[in-house]
Length: 122
Image (cartoon, rainbow, N blue to C red; front, side, top):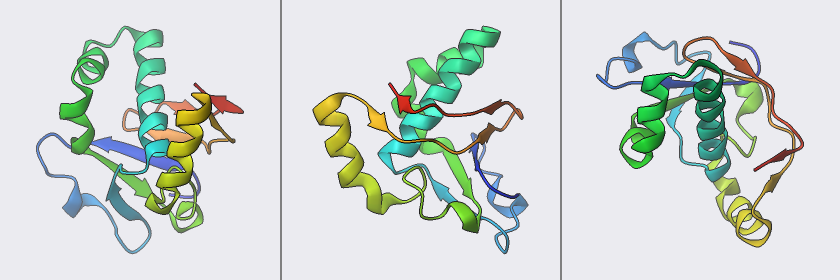
């Protein structure tokens, strides 16, 4: 994996042994910007495909969010989407303006869909 982030839904807790941890870091989605990015990707997927599974994930977001893993290559470790250290800064920006300003990296859903971020994520 080179560049970008990957989000993987692991409902049966079988992903961890399948990941080569020497080339990518695997972590839960804890950074607020990463959570918003993931949710936006799923919303876009549902809008484009009418996915029943995606709709269920959005309806039960609090249940499903802890089941997602974020795969982070070394080049992305310090991005707001992947780094929990950005939490307080991102939260302040979200609370004050209702948006997170910045360019997101290209990222991939487990199904292989690719979405490029925009200047502002609403």
